[in-house]
Image 1 (cartoon, one colour):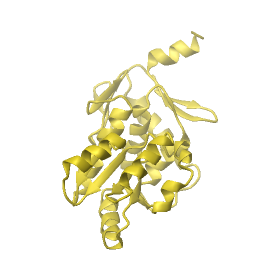
Image 2 (cartoon, one colour):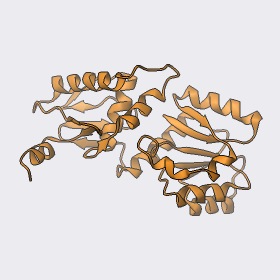
Image 3 (cartoon, rainbow, N blue to C red):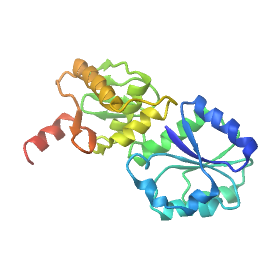
Image 4 (cartoon, one colour):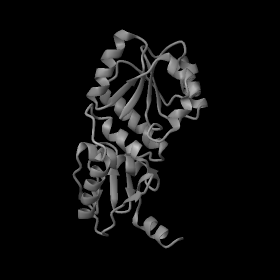
Length: 237
């Protein structure tokens, strides 16, 4: 998972980046000038789910407002050294999704981000059912037709992206970010196709209906769809 990080204090930045990396997040440091740039580019496929972690600063409210004015729906989390109810309220009213006091453990931060992301996709609970599939957002492997299906760390990241957006096309760029954001290693070009193939095989081995769920939408990406939805499209309805 990539995360945009704004922390103008150099003595804090390195430690915070190390903490985020320990939770398999990939921080992307940004400067104040970032918020004066073309923020609408964040709406491109593959960027819209990347959260912002913003340190408290005199320009905080303006930064949040600039992101929201540009139409960015990315999760925004604010970091503070001390709790201040009035400042917290101002940040939330400006469009922030959460306001936390640091230091905070990366595992808690990741859970907060996951919770915001789930709700933004319409999933308030810790799990979602799509046909025979029960997907969990707390790290557990999915269940398909009552069987637990073991997924690797990267397979799980891809699977979660697809299920969060069930019924919608997920671009390869978004899926690529979900995988590549966990590692500094440069993957090869066809890495997404390989992982999708592995996940499809595991679903095929477990789904009682024989339905594979992952549909390739040529030129756009992949869609996770239940049996009824796929049959409806095939029938031209």
